[in-house]
Length: 338
Image 1 (tube, rainbow, N blue to C red):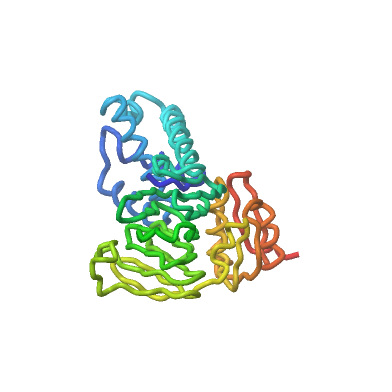
Image 2 (cartoon, helix red, strand yellow; image 1 turned 90 degrees about the vertical axis):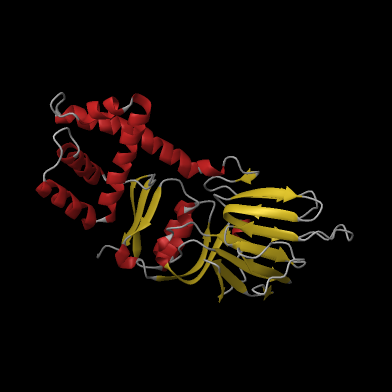
C-alpha cells in the first residue's frame, strides 16, 4: 500500500466516502460519479482511498467479510463509531508504514542493509570495500566463477581490492536493470525506486565511474563476460551511465558522487525538489517541498547526519522557510514577506 501519509481532512473525507458508497445499500450512480470526481481531484484523495482499501482487506483477512461489513454497516453503528474504528485500524497501518520508513521491510532479508539515516561500510572476503548509503540493501554471492554483488535498493560505492593478484573472478554489481563489471575501479551505483518523481526518475540504475572503468550490460545480456553482448558499453573514468528498460544512455557525471560516504551532500545547481528528495531519504517522517519553489536552483554542501541543520542551510541559500507541523512532518515553503 502507499506509505505517504495524508492530511486529517483528506482522511476524514475518504472515510465519509467509504460510508456513503461502500455500505450495505451500495452506491447510486450519482454517488459513484461524485466519488470518481473526488478521487481525480487530487493525488492525496486516491492515496487515502487506497489506504482505507488496504485496511478493509486486512480486516477481511483477519475476520472474514463479516469483520469488514461490521465496520462499515451504518445501520448498526453511528458514523462516529465507524470513524473511530477506521481511525484505529489506520493508526496500526500507519505505524507499520512508519516502521517501513525507518527500515524498509522488504530489505530485512538482504545480506547487508541500512535504515533511514544510516550508512555502513562492509569489507568482503576478497577485501573489496562496499559503502552502503541510507535505505540500501545488497546480497553477496561469491562462487568459483564470479563475485556478484546484487543491489536490491538504494546506493552503493564500490572500491575493488587488488590485495590478491591471483584473483581472476570478475566482480559484478547486478540490479534488475543490468550488470556493471568492475575493470579495476572505484564506482558508485544507484538504483532508483519507481515513483521518485521529485528527481524526475522512474526506476532505473545509474553508475558513476570515479576511477578506471566499468563494463555495463543491459539486463537482457548475461552477466558473465565470457558470453558475448553486443550492447556492452565501457564507461570510463569521469563518466556516468543510466540503464533502464533495456536501454543505456550517457548522463552527466559528478566527481563528488560518493561524498555521502563522508556524511555530506554536495549539490551543484540542482532543483530544490531534487535536493529535498535526497534529504528525505536520510530523515524519518515526511519531508516535502511546496511546488511553487520546487524549481529553485541550489548550490552548496549540506550535512546528512543533521538534516535539521541541512534545512537551515537551505533557508540561507534560497528564499524558503521550513514549516514544522511536527518533527515528523516538515515542508519547505516560500519565504513569507516581511
